[in-house]
Length: 315
Image (cartoon, helix red, strand yellow):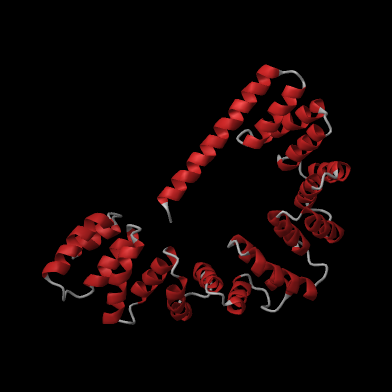
């Protein structure tokens, strides 16, 4: 048992498991054996295997705080949020007041189990804002968007605007959701409202330009995209859209100019190379066009390979 503890501390949980499983088979009444096996499985990222051992450890000693924490984290890791939630609630009073990680996990579990009110209150507490304030609703809406719960985020953001109609970034988030859903007209309306209350953020002009491009309102798009660049010359997004506008207007020289600037800012962006290739093709610069088409294709293939690898690896 002492040797197993040393191996766990040394970051060798698999070696520790070999010893611990042998002890469990020959002397199952050994104190804390289930807790130690569960911990070793947890540290080797075998969360599903850790769960039954940690549950047994808590049956033997329900005040074992470490096993409670590891079991909660194991459930969270395998997306069994309803099982993790009561454990995290039990742990919360025992943790330091500044323990932001546990609060974030608890808020996530409330969201994943559709306890919206509790989730917002925990999130508000995490960021030290009043739980019924406009900021609390807005920040919780942003959190829901990150969890890909856009439809549920909308009423939270609307509630924020009812509390403060001039709240910065609220209309922006609604516009982003509209763009995600493909409703460019609604997005343009929300983003225009954001510009009226929050005119100093380049992101707003960039996304408004995106909406106008989708609506084929190229004059309006060019205006706001230039404003985005004047506020932030280091982001490639507005340059890409300006290049698209120029291509739509059959102006490959203008497109090439802005897209060359974009490729200097973000050389690993396949969209930039693709549109730059189209601009060069329009200028009769066939060899350069072929080169950038090839780069765009390679970057897309690399992106797909990375996505496949991440999917196969799993959580």
